[in-house]
Length: 152
Image (cartoon, rainbow, N blue to C red; front, side, top):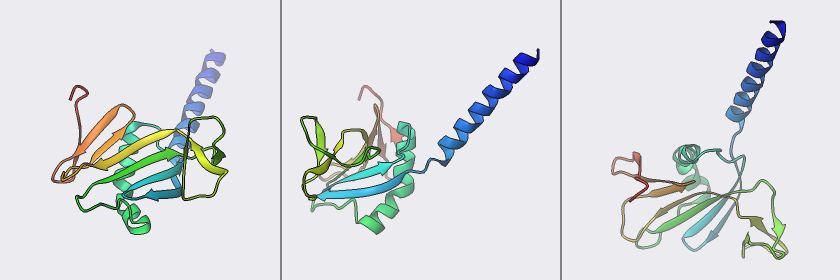
C-alpha cells in the first residue's frame, strides 16, 4: 500500500512539474526577417499545439505591428507571415534543406525548417487565414477566428 501511495505521489508531482513548465514556457521572438510583403518570425519556446499557435498570433498581432511593422501589406492588402522554431539558432546551409536569409551574411544565415504557423491574406480578400499544424482558421468580419473544415 505504501508503494502505491509513493508511486501515485511521484506521478502527481511529475505531472504538476510538467504543467508548470509548459505554462511558464513563454515564446520569445529572436529575429524577424522581411522580404517584400513577406516576413519570417523566429521564435524560441514556440507554442506546442496548433491552437496555442493561433492564441499566440491573436495575443501578439498588435505588438508585431507596433514593434516590427508586420504584417506589411501590399497595395492589394496581401501579406504573408511565417513563424519558425529558432531553437538551434543560425546554422550554415551545408547540404541540408534549410531556410536561409539573404538579409544576413553567410555562412551562418540559415535555420532548420521547423515550421510553426503561417498567417496570410490573399489578394483583394478581407479575411486573414492562419495555418498551424494540420489546422486552418479564417478570421470573420468581427475578428473571431473559426476553424475551416478539413474537407474544404
